[in-house]
Amino acid sequence: MLSATRRAPILIGSEIYRRSSYGPKHPLAIPRVSTALDLIAAMGWMPPGGWVPAPLATPDQLARFHHRDYIAALQRAEATQLVDPADKARFHIGAHGNPVYREVFSRPATSAGGCMLAARLTEHGGVVHCPGGGTHHGRPDRASGFCYLNDPVLGLLSWLDQGLDNVLYIDIDAHHGDGVQDAFHDDPRVFTLSLHEAERWPFTGAADDRAGGHARNLPVPAGFHDAEMLWLLHEAILPVVRHLRPQAIMLQAGADALEEDPLSRLALSNNAHWGVVRALMGAAPRLIVLGGGGYNPWSVGRCWAGIWATLNGIEIPERVTPAAERVLRDLTFHRAAGRNPPEHWFTTLRDAPRRGVVRAAVQRLAAATLRGLPAAG
Ligand SMILES: [Zn+2]
Image (cartoon, rainbow, N blue to C red):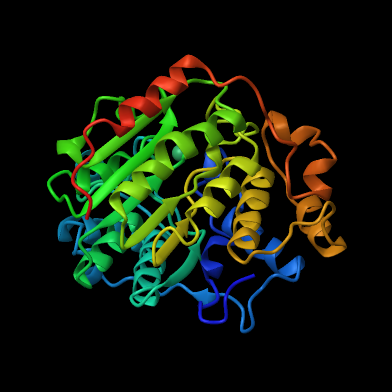
């Protein structure tokens, strides 16, 4: 149970995600944040007063990290639903998997507003879950990897602007958190640690990539499973946390590292994500947990709803409530996995654990992670 002195976790949401789609053939055609929020409500886990709405970030707020001409180009693309060839070439809007869609400015600006709000709400400590955040590939001056803006960077900058100088960003998405690492390449106040599938787009984040000393990368092999995650949690991630003693931790909990995800080849169950969340609770006075990738609507919704339960110390029951089962049965998915979904995607939140032998390649990553850590904060 949470102690009486500790503030209850805060859930940040928005309705903008519910009917928003990157287009019918895009991996982000699926409902993700709305599914997680609907499941949380249907399980009876919504906090009193419900979730806190993420505000739309203003261009001035976004300009803390993003270039003004890029912000203006996103606003133009939303207003006209078109992009001219110069903007397309320069800003990668309408190109490279970053389509022009109805909310192409306001949806990412809402994620950014949510993550900056999370930083404000934790100024004096606390825990915030913001499943709409986690767009870790966004660049100051262009879209990248389905990410137009970089809400984790903007949230981390908000913490720094409050005067924090020892912040830890942990990223367990299947893809390297390149946009966040590069944003703080020359700023040792933010230590970034990314665990991701090796040899997968964006093909950065090798084990020896340390961004000037205050980054660590754990590129894990295909088939990476729960026992391996548990091992890296205890042999790499938590030792880094104990060494740095950060004032704040931001966790990007992309659900594309789960086995059912169509875009990666990792084999985690959602127990792995929940275990990381549980281990980080209380490890710093401030904790923000974001969403991120995740391209199977059932595994994303179940994972992120379970993260909220974990943050609240709620025991996840064997079977979901009838209302939550309706949320899960109403989902559709136009990929192979959606044609004949297994029954437990409808009736449970918790996956069966995926155990196995911890491979030598994984063990070597932990040893390398702990070598040459910067002086503790
Ligand atoms: Zn990803």
